[in-house]
Every structure is written in C-alpha cells, then in structure tokens.
Image (cartoon, rainbow, N blue to C red):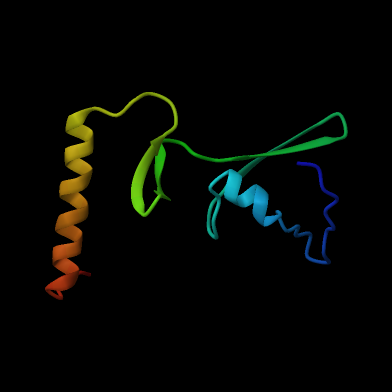
Length: 92
C-alpha cells in the first residue's frame, strides 16, 4: 500500500487503518524506526510474540523461535493465577 502521510505540529503521523489491520497493530504497540539515505522505515517492535484475535479466538503469534509446551503452559498458568487474584480482590 502506498499513501501520503502528513506530519502534525507535534511530529505525529497516522498509519492508515488498512496498514494497522494488516500488521495487527493497535493502540500502545511500538514501532522500530530506521532512517538511511533519505528513507524512513517503520516496522513492528515484537521481541517475542503477542496475542491476536483471529476468527473469534485469541491466538499467540510467535516472532522467531517456536515456544515450547512448558513455556506455553507456564504462561497460561500465570495468566490464570493473575485472573483469579483479580477476581478475588487480591491483586496489587
């Protein structure tokens, strides 16, 4: 997709929704910026992976090496424990 973007007074630009959707970007996500030879390149800053909604389900998208079953089970256990603490009013 090609588009002409305008920089506002604060130096901000708005990425078109089609681009945000294609790259699974949402508010709060980070981008890495590279500039070289009069060209600026932006790419999502994804160190490990992230959860995205796909067809009504949450799916973990890994960037790089695959995660192990132990890592997956550990993350699920941590998320459930955090949810339970919040539901019981024990969260910090």
